[in-house]
Amino acid sequence: MACSAFHQNTGTLQYHHQLRQVSSSGINIECGNVSMKFPLKVSKLEIGLSRRGAYTGSERSLRGIKASSSQTSVVDPVSSQSNEGTNDLRKKSSEAALILIRHGESLWNEKNLFTGCVDVPLTKKGVEEAIEAGKRISNIPVDMIYTSALIRAQMTAMLAMTQHRRKKVPIIMHNENEQARSWSQVFSDDTMKQSIPVITAWQLNERMYGELQGLNKQETAERYGNDKVHEWRRSYDIPPPNGESLEMCAERAVAYFRDYIEPQLQSGRNVMIAAHGNSLRSIIMYLDELTSQEVVSLELSTGIPMLYIFKEGRFVRRGSPVAPSEAGVYAYTRTLAQYRQKLDDMLN
Ligand SMILES: O=C(O)[C@@H](CO)OP(=O)(O)O
Image (tube, rainbow, N blue to C red; front, top):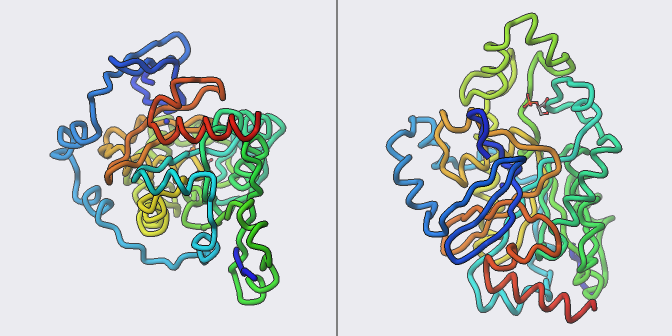
């Protein structure tokens, strides 16, 4: 018995580019009418070294953050997961896939309202974006899912997983108290093998937008001025009135990532995170070693998955999988290619 439970335009870095082609000389990425080629040889280490001198004290502390908050969910189920689809591959490889998805359009995105920690659901368009995101990642192994505590991120994760070819069932872990844990036990190893634990964590929530929550973004810009509102929305260390700056959001989100998610990747588990514009901006700032100036121009689109490969202790951004048939995604690593082949053999 088991109790188991990734453009540059008008100065704006937008991580919603479309990966078009991977060749031996580089990666072609298209975004709108813009096409860029990135040489494969440019490593994160090189980028990091050239940027490291520009870090501020708080950025350095971002990299040294220890979580001050407790984990919201117990991860026991994971150790009892066989993840048999990728387990044998894991033994041969120290690499893991990390998928980041900002939730699909929410009802307050549609109304152009500051949302922050207000818990609103997806629009119909948001539902469609989540399903489309799922199609893009349907051949990438997922062993664990992390979402924020907010419904728009959870809807996105669940809807995306309806498209996954492996058809494992995502199960939200309820560890908020002993009774919840006890009442949500599963008593079949076989069933657990066909499941993916979903860990919800408030630390991955959207930045708390303070007294802007519920206000219209356009009206707020007209009242306080475009520059002030842009500073509140995109600066690193200037908080909106009584809300969290990106730096404050990073203190919890990056700490959670480092303390709870990175160890899963280190042990070879493939992880998907469904979260929010700013909690993901802070995590990407950490992964890509962006400076506080660079993160100002980082924008994330709703419902676009970004793929990173974690290998030998380093994160390498691999853009956004375009479609299940996109051969380039599977050229990233031998492990992913093998996984896809296995799916093809099993399901076709
Ligand atoms: O309203 C919000 O919570 C966020 C994300 O939608 O807005 P912004 O674009 O200002 O980060």
